Image 1 (cartoon, rainbow, N blue to C red):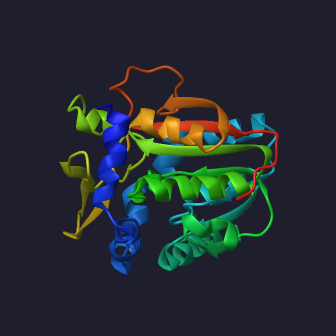
Image 2 (cartoon, rainbow, N blue to C red; image 1 turned 135 degrees about the vertical axis):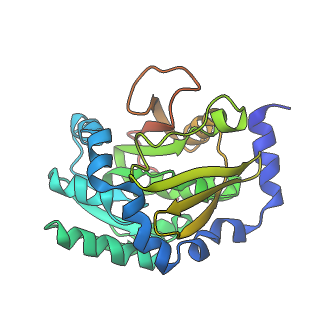
Length: 269
């Protein structure tokens, strides 16, 4: 049995409630702590202009940020001149994102929507869709991932760009490396660590200097599986970067960033 086949079979252990668990995990107190976890300034320095350059080089004007969270990438992209629509499944996250945007001189256009039915809630088409911050791993079933990607595809203009990132779960599952906090979770006085990882679930614990602690449960997506899934959803020209670099050893990066293109033909659900 291949790793990809095993991953799909494992999905049968989960109902749709697995995908919906983020609604309970992102409670108000955790959302209020989220910016302390990522540290906007340090994260911006770590990422540099990677996403801006990828989008600008492909002539992108309009962007749908489907995992807005507290708004970091939406605000950054708006400040760089892109027309951004910000979506998230959590109303608490969207409220915080709007507050953060206004604090930085940007008024966000927000939509609360589940990825599985995204096109039912979003009007128009976009030059690019970004799904960042390891968000795609909140989907616990293969059918949910395929449905979400179908909606992403339908909402893109012909030739549009998809950027989707994921943690390097291969390294955690194969025990070849432990995550660092160099790029994504940059808060100085925060501990973000895996407390359990197997083929069915990745459980992370987030501890703050004031004693507050929270847990998130995600699905440990292997890189090859995600690449194949994107391809099977109709996307082409997939390039995968490791921590914003083109060439790295398998175990090195904390995160992979997949960049794919919709075909010129118009895709519909």
